[in-house]
Amino acid sequence: SRIINWCPHCLTALSDAEVEYVDKPGHLWYIRYPLSDGSGDIVVATTRPETMMGDTGVAVNPEDEKFKHLIGKTCILPIMNREIPIVG
Image 1 (spheres, rainbow, N blue to C red):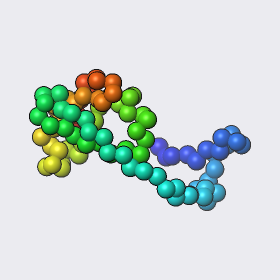
Image 2 (image 1 turned 30 degrees about the horizontal axis):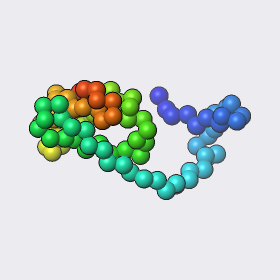
Image 3 (image 1 turned 45 degrees about the vertical axis):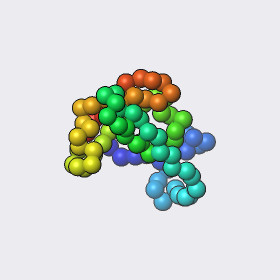
Image 4 (image 1 turned 120 degrees about the vertical axis):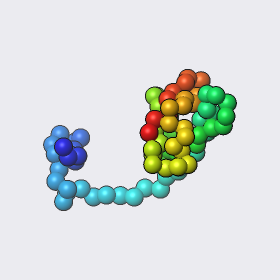
């Protein structure tokens, strides 16, 4: 039950000591998903907005009072106009 470092060129596993981590600059996108009942929206932050069309739900921290009330509701996936659940 561990993550394995894999070399796609050599087709073999690598030890943690062989891995060189590189920080790359990126962008954090904030996307508003409207709530299905029209009472507002939930903002989702992502570094990969191109994957949002495959979203099947939005997960929130069930212990965070700011989002706890949204668990069990649904929101509309932008662009796809598809209803998806909000889970905790």
